[in-house]
Length: 224
Image (cartoon, rainbow, N blue to C red):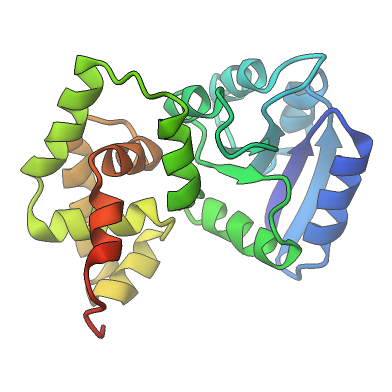
């Protein structure tokens, strides 16, 4: 069972997410909480995945994210937002969030997104990640230098990076490109090292910044 906690200041949102996720046979909502209650609730219930509202009046989502990331065994955290160009999303992703979900995500997609998070994948659609970058148009020289590191990857590594950015886990990437899980893991490690990033989300952001996802969509299907 995937243990999930929903953190939102609105009781209706919490109950709605709980109702939808509890319908899945492999997901258990172990707690719902406000921002002020979140850290204690995580300590008490030990969820695998936390869905965390980024904008809350009592304790904001970025503050809660920082506190959860500081725990000895932090859960996977994805941010909940109403706007795909939310100005705080990029900060959250750079601070360790594993992705973000729009609150109007289709109910039949929600459980699968939680499964992706639990499996170590990234939940961040290309359309939404473009909106995040477009809401921060003033790229710095450091941003451009980071994106340039993508060009140092091998063709296979760039292929794997695109699949990381699409939210696939190592097992799913292996199936897609016909590689063993161990080989995919080695590729992912090499990608993170070459890009000098600490995780899959940061790598996905650089892929988007460098235009790698747009390029992959322009290529014709390979028939794999």
